[in-house]
Each structure stands twice: as C-alpha cells, then as structure tokens.
Length: 355
Image (cartoon, rainbow, N blue to C red; front, side, top):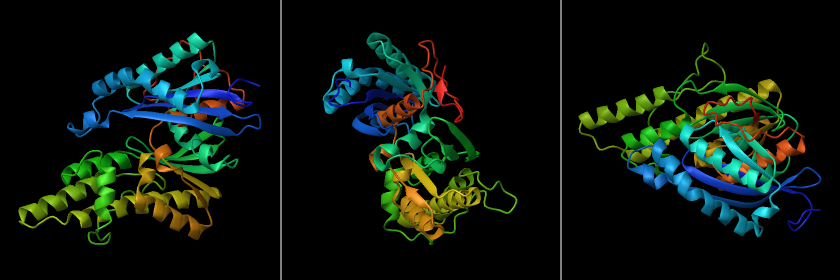
C-alpha cells in the first residue's frame, strides 16, 4: 500500500518530442490496469504559427520554461506530491533532438532526486498505450493506426510493452504534414488540421477527384504517400487562380480530407483483415479529425472490426500517454533505463525502452 489514496504505483510521464510539454500521472493498479490521475499540457504552437511549422529552437526553449509549472499542475490536479511518485517515464524518442533532450534531462533529475526508476520510452507506443486509460486493456493482438503531424504508421501490437511491428508507414509526408501544407496553400491558419476539418464540413467531398497515393496494384499494400496529393491540391489551386476563378475553399478542403481518410481507413481495414485482427486502435493528433474517425467507424463496422479511439485530448501529444507506457513496462517487469540514457530522435518503433 502506497500513500497515493489507494494501492498501486504512480508513474509520472514527461513528453517533449515536439511542441507540447506534457506531464501526466497514472496509477498502475494491483490487477495490472492503469488509471489516469492527471494530464497537464503546455503548448508552444502559437509561437510557431507565424513560421508555418515547428521551429526546433523555439520548441526547446518553450519546454525549458514550461517543464516545472506543467509538472506542478499535474501533481496539483492529482492531489499528490512529488514524494508520492514511484517511477518516472519520459519520451526518449523519436522526435526533435533538442526538445527530447529537455524532457530526458528533466526526467533524469526527477528520478534521481526521488530515488525512483526511470523509463525512457518510445513516443509512438504512447499513442497506443493511451487508449488503455480510457477503453481498458487491449486484446492480446491488435492493429494500431497512428496518424499525427510527424508519423503515419500501421503497427501490429502484441502487448504495448512487448512486441510491436511496423507493417506500413509513410514514404514521404505524414498525413498531418500534408494537412499543414494544404492549409498554407489555402491560406488557412497553422496547424492545418482543425481549420481544414471545419471548412470541409461545408464542402462537397466529391467535388474534386484528388489522387489516392500508393493505391495501385503494384504499390506497397500498407505504405502511405501524401506528397502527391499535396502537389495535386497546389496545382489545382494554381490553375484556378490563373483562370481568375474564386477558390471553393470548402470543396477543396472536403475533397482533400476525403482522399486522406479514404486511403488511411481502407489500408487499415485491409491490413486488419489480412492479419486476422479484430481490433483497430486509431490514435495520434489527426485521429481527432471528424471525417477520419467517422469513415473508420463505418468501415470497421462493415468489416466486423472493433474500433477504439481515445478522446481527442488524449490523441494529441501528452504526458499521460508516456506515463501509460511506463506503467505497462513496469507491469511486465522490464528493466528500468539507466540515468545515462540519451535522447534518440530516430528511435525505431520496435524499441520500447532505451538503455
């Protein structure tokens, strides 16, 4: 019995892979379940907006300034103190090198000061593990579709802290990057996902036949490509402007969004079917997109696949998802990281814990 309002072990999770400083707290219960206690996030997105994308140096400085206040907010929300923390988990990769270093350094300091284990974990697995905070334990084997600003991947998952295998990935722009670039073309705000989603609700998704990347018979079955789609939008807009036509922003947004959601959901459902998996986890920042989630529900229902989607707040980068990975790792008895671990910007998804 530990002094946290009940039995179990509390994990502090720290996330600084990009432009969100996240601090989350979860409790690993005696039965192996993981419960969310607090989730605090400080975003520097407004500081990057005028540049149309994340500036690594600005992100790193923002993490330095936000780290201690964000951890304090999480502790206050959970109603506990630092002395109640039993382990610290931190994103060791992948991500921006400088941003990762801020988080890893802070996590080392907290772990050393508290005398508790440190787990440097994989950011991508956090997007899978966070689903367990809302929807309970995952089945023994499932498929995960991660769709964010920097990653678009299909993962075969046999235990969050055990075996994760990439079966498909983007060969160029991630879906979120394509949203940002198309938003810039349409002169919509950064980040591009929310404004395109809002504009698309008033448009016709069949108005413009934008291409579906890597869907030909000779293309890789489960890989993605969104660079050609982005270019097709740019050329369509350029031709319309050259002809002096007013841009139908809503129709362009809806047609672009439909092309992205169509490819993502089609490949995910086909992958799950071919692998004999009956559960699909959809996560990452783009999972909050209304059309993607709606089409995923429709196609999963038609294929007899259970769809699990965390609430939008948990889909975006946050400390709770990293704490969740740490809790699952603790539950399986994985050896903690050393205090000498380094940030790994290119960490492969097959790496669960850094040593």
